[in-house]
Image (cartoon, rainbow, N blue to C red; front, side, top):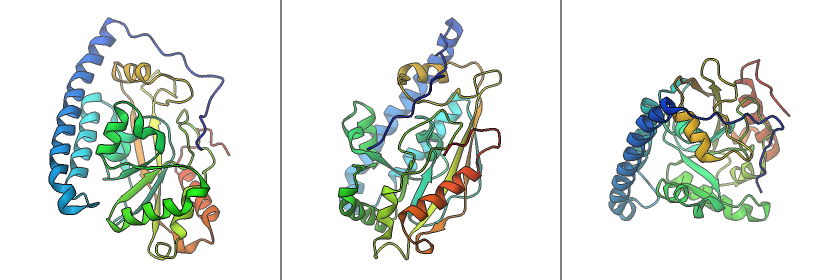
Length: 278
């Protein structure tokens, strides 16, 4: 089960003034329209893609990627990519800071997220997650065999599966210990010799003069309040996505060793002034 990371020093959500609300509307309204149109087009394409291609999704991931690129164009947040996404199917593991990670990680690379099962039933977000091919699982070691089968089917379909091994989001200025449970699925004999995992570090830089944790979303922060703060900001910061060299599963003895190697790679990409927690 995932746990919620909390902090004794959660920043106060700033109140938007009149100009801030105008900026929010100028960004939120067009992006909501793009999301709505994108969802409708995606669902229409899936009417043909699903029966013709099954688990394969040769078209719809491009729609998702286009919507996420539009988010950065509209929001004003600068996105920088370092390194290259791996070629071919595999898993991607990333430090988790915010709901913004969905856009940050989907814009440069076509990925399918792995999410906790309860997200499936969330209003709005659950619908979008199902439509975009999110893989829902229970983080329970007793269901390891079921998870292996799900991972295997998706990988055979050519999917890049992305998950957050920390199991929770933070303030964006630390990396929590990686949970190794999901890594166990990659040691299935049918997967181990062909499987690669790419560690990715995501670094958010706050707007000038703002709290360094500006883009972090954690604990009891409300989604609506954080969304308003981000899209209503007069100045925006940036986010950098660092793609590290893929790691071969076969080069590691077990899931704990693989998780540790991935965690070390993600930590290694974080700036020296961030608090890197163990």
